[in-house]
Amino acid sequence: MCGSGRGSLALEGSFVVREVTGGVTFAVRVQPGAKRSGVVGIYGEAVKIALAAPAVDGKANEALVRFLATLLDVPRMSVEIVSGVSSRSKVVRVLGVTSSQVVDGIAGVELG
Image (cartoon, rainbow, N blue to C red; front, side, top):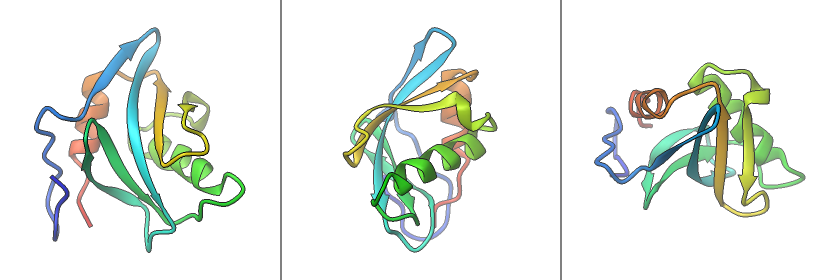
């Protein structure tokens, strides 16, 4: 499901978004230090996101929060890394969105 070339991301039931009180949680696999930030595919049950920021001093975590807030059109304060702060595999909580909004937002991203 990781794409080569351009096209929309196909979410073939493997990406899992869980509804929680006030929002959703989902798994993210980050790839810090990339040429540019963007969704690059699906990694197991997680969405794989490349980040231009390095994995130093929390810069990649902040870049992830900014990226997801922009992608899902929510304030940065609505995006929280709930586990995996020092790992490439993370769980993110986003308040104020539904699971279908997350899936639609991520599926609509152009792959780089």
